Image (cartoon, rainbow, N blue to C red; front, top):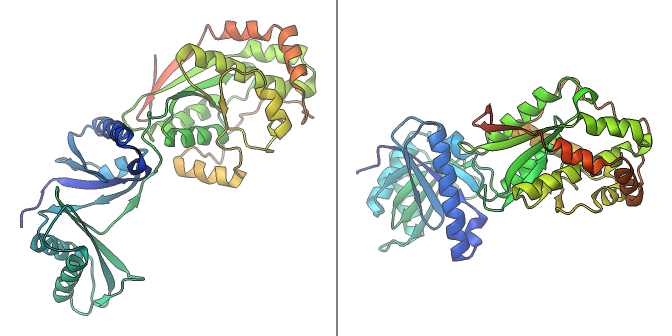
Length: 396
């Protein structure tokens, strides 16, 4: 029996398979490029083979391919595999070799077999033969196809045989970069990085935009923002994330000096969207991503969301709109952006009683009266740009 001695990991993709042939080819090419970038990011020279429904990644180095592939969007699960020829004998011998290293007498087990492009036997025959040989090799085993304690998977394919017994979940979604580019308004909080991650998972390339409050914000905003960006960069290994900070103290000062206190928050949110829209138009982005969540705070009532968005020329996407806070926190923990002790990230512009039902006309009236669009154009002239890659932040 001749097996591939290199480390081999199989990844499966999900809904990409449902796309038309040209779209599927485009998405798989992007997925291949993203895997290559990840391999390069950990200093590994690997080979990538893509079949109609499987990806095999091979490496001569002892790299953690499982960890890498489990953070690449578009992959639904990952398995370390043994490879062999697709003959009945080779597949069964490989299955026995793998199963014997994990099975104990009395274990309930099942063999799951499938065949694609291979003649001479059917899947049921392959499963039965492999099961029989495993039983001969380990005494006292019990076949249980419904609730087995151990499962082994055998795939006979024209490209070669694959045998494995472990499946590790991947993030799913679509390959990063297949769905255009958007500006993500990001803060030091919990919601906005989760919203960005959900859109990244759907293939959207991100440009992160942070509107820095200066003396109107808490002292721990900067370090929490960087933690969020570092965590998000680990979900696109080997690929650069661009982050732009706009020093916006004049913006906040105008709000404090000239706006009616109860309207500050809705005016601030509208002005942020206007700023993001102008930046999006300059950089070729097709949308704005926010962490808005219906009813969570005063600015996020259904009425306020409508008035805040009025007149914004770039589409605004709110992936968290229907999530509960606990659901958002669960995702934040999963993706590494949650902090139980973020320190002082407060905003001193926040009034004691913000309005919950604002009018778009009142917001526009203030924007015009305070020359807020002129202020936005002015502060956009001084962006601070950074690149985040594999958890490392560099100034541009």
